[in-house]
Length: 465
Ligand SMILES: NC(=O)c1ccc[n+]([C@@H]2O[C@H](COP(=O)([O-])OP(=O)(O)OC[C@H]3O[C@@H](n4cnc5c(N)ncnc54)[C@H](O)[C@@H]3O)[C@@H](O)[C@H]2O)c1
Image: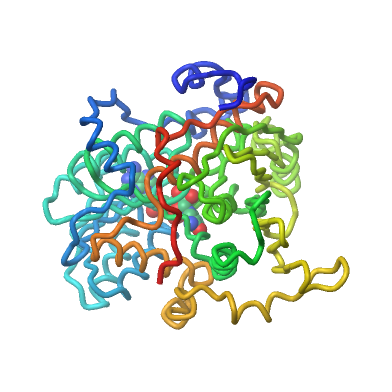
């Protein structure tokens, strides 16, 4: 902990700086109400004894499963894509599907039957019908690909009813939500895995392999981002268009930190030797959404008159306890090509993504970037070397398949999962931390250490095959 950083505890942090829905949210009425509210949160129950907690924090592994029986909650675009992956992975059964959109649930269930599985039972009676799914005694894993505000309630319900859970990104959109996931996982002794698919990207895994083999030297700095023009999607009348815009109306923050940050954090052994320490954050003006809406729908359209809270470019700087720095950016509302930056800088060289390039001292000429291809053969991650064929055609260039495959392998083998609840919390925490820092004129805000000191001794993630 740094001496000069404000010593806010997590509860104080939560109380301190939330400024409430903007006038725009009020103007648009119920459709945009309370984007950040994670429904149905009660008090956290008593924790188990310290020895059990220490064992969990050291690296939790559950008893091996014979088969992984999955109950899905949320089978929209991303949930549906995961279902397709699991139907191609040995040892998996999709036994139940919950979605508030009944025709969609039926459509996805038909894929299971077409693949030779038994027809999954459907749960389509509204927002909290996932509770009935969680009551089943033939589900091992509740896979949660709902809109953000439902991530924590569904995962908590799953763990409380004895299931492991996997959740799409970000795992939580508040610090309180991050803590609820950690405390519930520790108390119930269940896995809570955030499905950060970018940790399984081909280039990202190659960089991890380079780092583990010492090619880049000692790590100093990283750059991570989610820069993705989502203006059209945010104004769509289906899928994410139904829920994502409201967060832009209400919150000025990095709303989606995990895709860029996950791989960099993995290289830097965050929660496994190092730990995020504090963050400062700054947002540009918010012009992109209103301008886009005026051009597309007309100046008088209510969507063009909203005062969106979300600054178009949010830039945060993170310092780790070992003194490394990370630039973390978020921009989903300007005309700009896609990038996650994916830069890892060490004492011997640097890798940068979008497009991939590398510079290794002693191997490169002058001050110019080198091509990555000659390095691929030496540093291709074994998971990609062995499974690229299986991953072909799956979502996001195949990385989604590999993350699903790895999750199943770990559950079948009774091994610790590659990503765990501490990663879910640490990678999701910048949502609220950046919001707090922006609201306070870029003051530093401390990261909670969700591992409560265990990060010092937890072993780094190896090169898993
Ligand atoms: N990892 C990635 O690359 C990636 C890509 C896209 C989306 N995502 C994440 O996946 C999640 C879902 O995104 P999406 O694009 O599939 O959105 P989507 O809107 O297409 O799907 C969400 C689904 O959840 C259903 N739903 C809503 N509330 C529900 C509830 N209470 N109970 C059950 N079902 C409910 C909706 O009907 C819909 O079918 C989000 O967290 C998003 O951030 C991740």
